[in-house]
Length: 477
Ligand code: CTP
Image 1 (cartoon, helix red, strand yellow):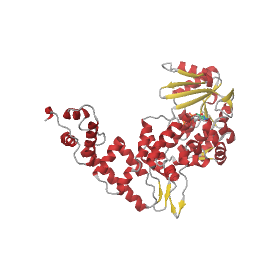
Image 2 (cartoon, helix red, strand yellow; image 1 turned 180 degrees about the vertical axis):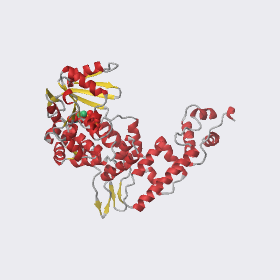
Image 3 (cartoon, helix red, strand yellow; image 1 turned 120 degrees about the vertical axis):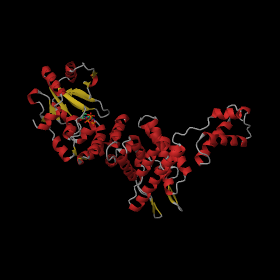
Image 4 (cartoon, protein in one colour; image 1 turned 135 degrees about the horizontal axis):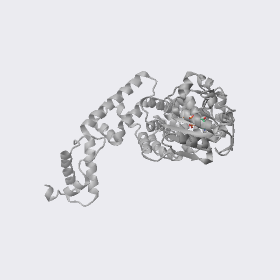
């Protein structure tokens, strides 16, 4: 056995698996992602898929009885699978099977089969690799479809005719694109054509699974690879039509606008160099989405996208809802980023006044740095002089944000005078005036008329109350 395979199976768990399989007289193999990632040296995988030529569930029970602490087994009888968590490892057991799928669902018709039957029904040659855990050939690599060669050539290829593999389970179309993005592999032409032909079948895949793959694409080093492939095969039209609508350049009377789809992909790649934050990457992907429905041509000023940030932020909700993504704080964060995505740009184009910076911090709150990161990623001009100017301008705005925040503490703005204090000061019952005074104090602070501190705010409150015809109460004097 080559040295590296020995190393892969060094963990004592593999001897336990081999012993249990031997006692039950079943052949057993570790297969799929573990083998692939091990051979690609992507670190020691934590998920171990085990296939038994026999009952996977029985094998799991026997393995569990041999492990210290007698870990719990989760059994999924309908699927004939079982799962054990052991230390930081997750062991998945399945019996080798032959499978074929019904055209209208992802539920397979399953029969018992040999290891090779099982390898054949897997998605890609690089995911069909197996290490034997049988005593007679422990550690041998079983590779009937030249997966190792494909790993070397960096190719995504299906063991069967691609049309069969993708039609059997259309999620695999997204998996192919996701692996190509994560690993920097090429999807072989026949496969790419089959994805294009089967694109419509993505409709039968659950939204949760689609989103899972989208997350993995977005978390890759260069997400544009995946989105360009989704676009090329036409799958994108079924999952994110809002992005497809951004494609294209129109020209009227010699005036053109940029292609906002390809621009968006550049922004996503840019931001992926500076942040791991998945939701900020989503914001980059969706930041210009409102440009398609707001696009207009005016004879005098050319192309405009007025209000696209607001429209885009509303579209975030519709998109998250359609994809069954949680409508929670993460969604609100993405909405906020889209809504505010042009604000720092306006600031950087002109001299950024302190009050404009204070308003930006007030509106963006804790997310002001994320917003700046998004705007910096939005610089995709190929003109080096312009690129430098924009970058420098954002640097100045960032510096100003630090200075203004240090002095005025706007980030988590708390009104220096509470509504109760205003009521007490003017002997008021809950009323409209309280809101008016509170908002006047806030405006005065943001405008820089008064510093953000109690005494100044109190004096301002008294003056504002007088203007409204209110009298300060006796015990406040
Ligand atoms: N598999 C498949 N078709 C699918 C999903 C999975 O054939 N639609 C097979 C592949 O052999 C895959 C294995 O099941 O290697 C395990 O699947 P999974 O854990 O989802 O993926 P991994 O390959 O382990 O990769 P990752 O963890 O990155 O998703």
